[in-house]
Length: 322
Image (tube, rainbow, N blue to C red; front, side):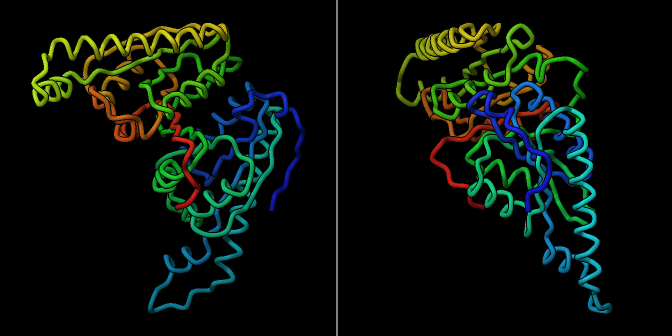
């Protein structure tokens, strides 16, 4: 059931983000996710759809005790009352922000319920917190976030508990690190990062990691000069970043290009730290080339320890199934 006030300001938003799905459960990470969604909506004009999953079967199983009889109806009533309260609170925040919003109660396990909704509805992005609480709702945003990231075919903004609150009047993001290789997911991550950047307020750090140890291993295996292999990999990275920088500048977005030597995950995290970034954008299922930059594993490495939100973008040929 969808409820709430709706307007069509989203029609003027960037084509890539017009409707944002935000799962809520009352946890601190979910609160951070709401905050980020409000910032995105302020910039893009997108409509926010707040959802809460009521998993009755899961709650009954978790509360069952062989020595006690579970009052199922009371449990269901409590779950739905909590859902109603959480959604109303989120909607009130969005309305105060001037953001069009609706609320939605989903039924069933969170991951499958969210993915089913993504499959059937016109949603352009998901904003979700990590490490949610164990409460009466049983919405575990840690495992839920992972399930959504691995299966959603729309960009997912993953918000950690350490995410910094926005400064009033500031852009949605001030500095975005974009991890790039020549894969389609990385291309989509760049496009989405540019869509949420604000000219004059947001800068992007376009980064390509050259994993030297892997370059050397591959060169040795093929009896190829490792210095030449490293030079060619770095040159290809610089050319890739130059093209991306041109696209950013065409949108009046300041861009810095950086080719770093080292492990991709560690390199992106270090860049985010040294550049004081407030978002890392990365694609999944990238290519295996001479530098072996596989963005599936890279994205996972970044997500596990990133202190700032991470924008994860998958390849297009993905179905929303758990």
